[in-house]
Length: 388
Image (cartoon, rainbow, N blue to C red):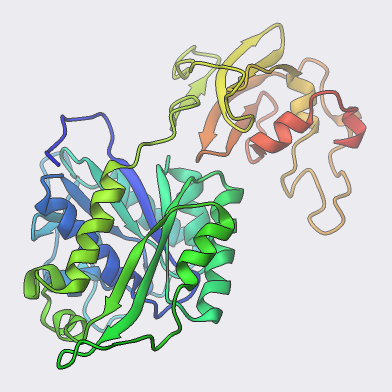
């Protein structure tokens, strides 16, 4: 594997887990180091705002970031990996007491306001679960894919399944499953003891139709490495766990992005004619849930999907079909926005991407809080507006 040519944007891969305590951050840090050792330019965003641990694992917890001349944060660097984390902005024992909007602000800053330089891969170490941070990242950034880390325990695997379903719902491609703490090899006799059962990660990957990326065995040195700020790949490069990390990193580095729809992110201002996304190829075998092209003419948005299907949705119909809390009751689904209150000549003013799965739209009446999922847009074809 060799260093790739400079690209416009790095591949963004989310490393997630359904629950805490499965070693996700340790896996992320070591995969990042393995990628850097293989010649890739790698960055890591420690997206666990409330419990950041990546800087400690890589030995840079005490470093405070500097600012570049153009007022961007300069990330710390260790073992060939650039890192941005909440742990670098606060004292070691200071809690991050933040409400949702502030968390979103920090996540946006960690990606967009950091002087990353040229990167091939940007790993996002997510907090456990399927909450606000995961949804924010899926909506705000064009994730190339997500990896789910689990232990072989049944309870961990069941919760991991929820995390994978969440990624599916926001159209983030699942790159595979990693089974961490797969088994303990006795250093004296070589006997492998499966403390948390065995084979669960591979089984759940097969069940959901995603790749099984590999097993990382238990290694007592992981604890010492985390305390000392040295990743396992540096402390024990010949260990079975280090070998597993390198194999997983190689697989992820070679995984191709989904390239069957328009490039995201984009923000198209119709009134100025700026930011319109470039059309992508279509074909009968293209995925039905990927948007390939956008046009706007005669008061209607024209959508062409990757499978070749075309739709014409009028601006007024789109405005009336908004599902946001201002337009629909969140509990009953009852329409709050009445057709008689929407002008006949209402028009779209802006259209932008929301992650890989939806469009945001702004209208001439000032409304701009609706999220139109690709699934909902496709369902509008051939339906009566009152039933949408």
